[in-house]
Image 1 (cartoon, rainbow, N blue to C red):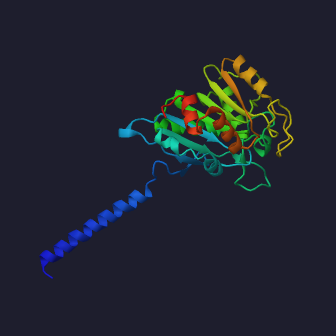
Image 2 (image 1 turned 120 degrees about the vertical axis):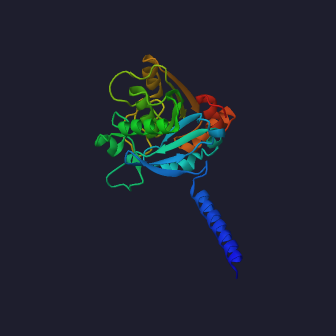
Image 3 (image 1 turned 45 degrees about the vertical axis):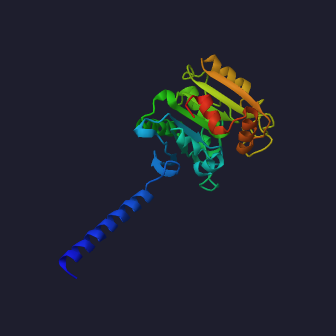
Length: 278
C-alpha cells in the first residue's frame, strides 16, 4: 500500500471518527421533548426543554408540583405535557421533601401551611424557600420574564402553589387541581395582580370542596374550603376562579372531566388560560 493510499485511508478513518463523535454527541444531547434531570437547591428537578425557532426566547415557564406522596417523575408520566415543548414552553417538575420518616424516599410532600402536610409541615421543611430559589434560577437561565412564569399543582402541590402565590408572588398565574389556600397567617400580601384557576371535583373526598377533613386519603387535616380560599385571595386583590367538574380527587379523573367540560385537551387549555400561543 503506497503513501497516497495510506493517506486516503487515514482521511477516511478521521472522517468516520468525526462522524461517530458527532453522532454520539447528538445522541447524548436531550431532544426537545425528552426529559432530563438536574440537581437544583439540593433537589432533583425534571426538565422538559422548549422548542423555539431561530433561538427565540421561550413563551413561558410552567412549574409543576406533585401531590402528597407523589414525586416529579410520577407526575410527568401522569400529565404527559410533551406537546408544550412545541409551544415554546419550558416545563419543570419539582420534588418536595420526604413525606414521612417511615415512608419510601420516592414519596414526597410539601409544607404548604396550616398543618399540611405530613413530615414536611411537622419539621417545617423550607419548601417555600427552595421552590422560590429554584424558580428564580430557571427563569433567569431560560430568560423567561416574571409575568410568564406559571404553575400547575395537584392536591398538596396545589396548596403549595397557592401559598407561594399568596405570600411570595412566585408565579404570575397558577392552575390549582383539587387544592386549597392553606397559607399560614392572615391576608395575601403578594396576591394583587395574580390569578388562580382552581379546578375541583364535586365528588372529592380527599380534599372536600366545602372544607374540613376528608373521608379518604391519609391526611387528617381540616382543609380550607374553596369558598374561603377564593374570598381570602380576592380580598387581597388577586383573582381566584373556581371551576367545578364531575370528578373525584384523582388527577387523571380531574383532567379527563375538565377536558370533557371544555372540549379541549389540557395542553390547549393551559395555553388558552395562561395566555401563550399554542
